[in-house]
Length: 281
Image (cartoon, rainbow, N blue to C red; front, side):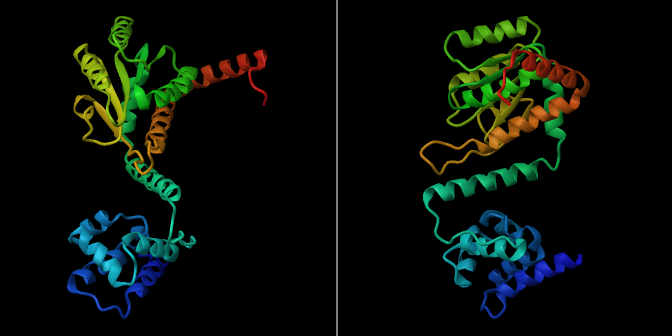
């Protein structure tokens, strides 16, 4: 353990000095000290798993230290271990929702420590001409966003963002034109048509990469590669910060896998945009 890690562990340990803790609570305290570097970013469930205790035990532990619950203890841990100012103890619903999205992004970042799935997904998609990108209902804007940028560097990107009887016709046409894979963005509440389209794509022999909110979402069992990214559920309508980040990470991986043609197409686009005065700056 280096000097910084020792100092961080010491600051976390100081939180528990003098507190009368049960054996279970001492176990939790030991786990937090042992994992001091990341303690400020762990959920109550993750702390419980590390310590081998129940999640309610973690809540009771935080209250034994004088906090209203585990989130309040985590704010103090974050201030101690990162040097960041503690978040305000009382947050309104909007603040809480946005802070929740930072947690989702942290999980995406941790997941990307291993890039095997992202690279495998990219390899499947860059070889598909055309490349259908499915996104219905809530996922339609994200499919369009991905498709807008992907079309700058990959030929034949087709965004399938409308349901109804023509959806499977368009999928059939993409397959007949040579598509070998499809990107499916399927978010809660999981449109039935999206899952059916993925089944049809698989039956036709297409590989499917799915961006969805969970590894156990209804589309996951039909996909060749699943890239999960949680959605925010604290507001009336979901926040899709995590899935959007994952979509753009996937596009970056596709660009990294084919750097020369991507660079050539970008330069061609920039030259055309300059000639046509497309942008103000």
